[in-house]
Structure formats: structure tokens, C-alpha cells
Length: 229
Image 1 (cartoon, one colour):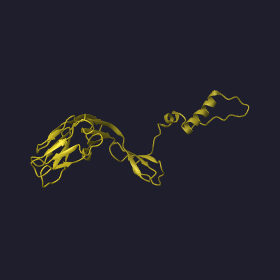
Image 2 (cartoon, helix red, strand yellow):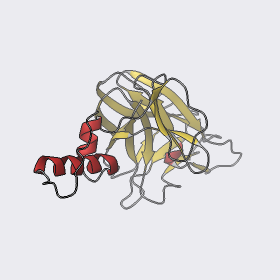
Image 3 (cartoon, one colour):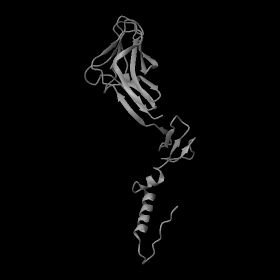
Image 4 (cartoon, one colour):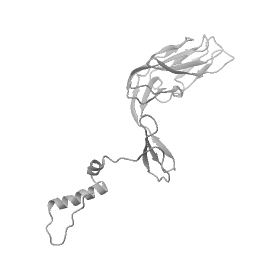
């Protein structure tokens, strides 16, 4: 490591010596970007296990978690968290009109589809509306004595699973109301461009599942978020 020049009394100070002192203080206290350039942009420890005796603000990189590791931090509540950045968020247009599903086999939900080019991160797929969303998704009994239904998310050619909801009823004209944000799917496809869509069905013939598309805050949209791995 280079030493800082010593300036003695009554001796002329060379510009290079003064600059060396300025650079040393800059690197020590981070007054400009120079320290980050000289030190490799503030690297944190890379380890295969969480360290012990942590203090608030401790940060390290776990190189044994996931394809790209995990940045970890210890907070003021003595909790350690993995920090997963949001890489991108893609949302379809909100439904302009109600979409009704009466099929007992999975069928595409019109307009709840989008295209996303991923980078190999983890996908979170859900539905959303502007507030409120509690009555934006409902199943009507109709001629059936049931309001059971299922919704599946499809990424490319892969179905992520069918999530169901509903209730059993004993009288006619009963509805089952479910917040669309209650349905969440997770996936980790390889990097690439995918069509993501929703399919839905009613369990009992005669019922109808309705995705609200009324004007205003109730129009349902499809949301896909990609997070770090």
C-alpha cells in the first residue's frame, strides 16, 4: 500500500503531495465515488453460511442459495432477510367487460393474457384490480347447487396448477365472492419469452364464474412479476 507523503514545516508542498492527501481522505470517508472505483465497488463478504455475532446492518452474500445466490442483511429486529430484487413487472390491460366462464373444463379467460421476456428469475403470477377488489371475482350458482370453481395459470405450455374456491349452497341464486388477489402462482422458467394466461372452469354444470370488467376500479388484470433468484 502506498504511503501518504509527510509535509514538514516551512517546506514547499508539491501539488502531487496535496492531491495524495485529498485522495486518501476521499477513499477513507467516501466523499466521492473514487473509493468505490478503487475498491471494486464496495464488495460484501461471499460465504456459504450466515455468519455469527451479527450487528444491525450486517450484509453478506450467500453463494450456496439458488442459481445466483442471495444477498442477506441483518435488521434492527434481530432478523436476517434475503433481499430479492424485483426485475420487472408486466400487467395486462384491465378487463373492459365482464368475462363469464360456464365450461366445466378449463378454458382461456378472454384478455387475461400477456407476453413476458424473462431473465431466468422467479415469477409471481396473480390478478389485481384497483381498490376495492373484494367483489371483482364471483361465481353464481345458477341451476347448480354449488358455486365451486377452479382457475389455472399457464406459462408457455406449462400449467402451474389449478386453484379452487367456492361453497356448497342449499338454496337458489347464491354467489361465492373471492378477491382475485387471493390467487397466486409461482414459477421459475428458463430465460425466454413466454405467453402467460389464465384458464378457468366451474366444477358443477349450471354455475357461472364471472371476472368483473365493469368500468372503474373493478376491472381485473393479470400481473406477472419477475424477482431475483
